[in-house]
Length: 278
Ligand code: C2E
Ligand code: MG
Ligand code: MG
Ligand code: MG
Image 1 (cartoon, rainbow, N blue to C red):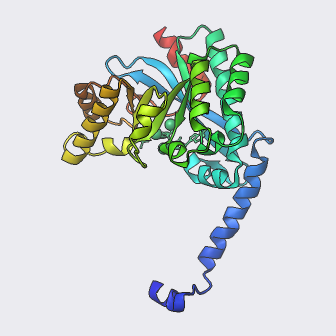
Image 2: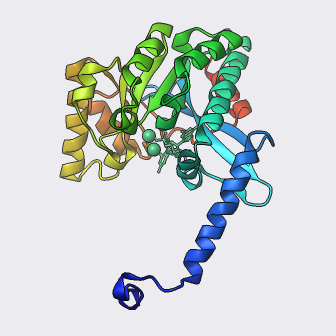
Image 3: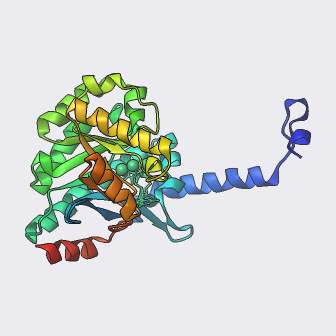
């Protein structure tokens, strides 16, 4: 079938393809109105001390519920939002909302150190990211260390002219910076020496074969070794089993997150869990 379609280098008309393009266009249009229509909310996944299970921080994860399209996880719209540039506005909303939520938990005297927010590489170019982060922290009355930004290696590869200036400015605010999905992308190790990073997040893909799969085990051990020798923190994500947690503890990783502990929770539920351990 695919041979016939590619004859002479031309694609014959494909209803499936046309439909996908149509859907993409519709999603794009709706995405543009989503912030103004209050269609986004955040869920918060606990980050825990692996030894005790105690929650000390939260990762904010974006959820989109459009009335026509239904609920959608980020994997279905982040790429699109990045390609249209809409992610910049969405990302600003996410930062603001996460800071406000952090503020509410603090006002309730709940014991939480910080909230971690995913930031797209697109938020680094052009717009003054450090400036708007500073403003949001001030508005919410939070110290810089109450916020962590999770960046993917793509930020470093795209290397928008001022990346290292933005990193420095954020660092001066006291904001923590971590590299998400470490090892999954490009892993140009040289930037780790250059940029003021606090922590690496071990990509959950490497935990899948653990314990047992020798190459997954070797990769985990290597990433932990890199973090340790550079004096960086290490956090594991996607921990689903006790065996994975125990293996990580043996490697010396003491903090992490995953379905073993909790999925992303609505703020009220997250607050209850914090209150229960206070
Ligand atoms: P991520 O930052 O690496 O987030 C972790 C993803 O793994 C989340 O998926 C989370 O729900 C899922 N997860 C957590 N624990 C487990 C586990 O034990 N097992 C498995 N299999 N998965 C687990 P989610 O919420 O669908 O987010 C997917 C990705 O979308 C995120 O990956 C992040 O890259 C991106 N994303 C999420 N929120 C935002 C946002 O506000 N802004 C931007 N730019 N990207 C976001
Ligand atoms: Mg993340
Ligand atoms: Mg990740
Ligand atoms: Mg990811």
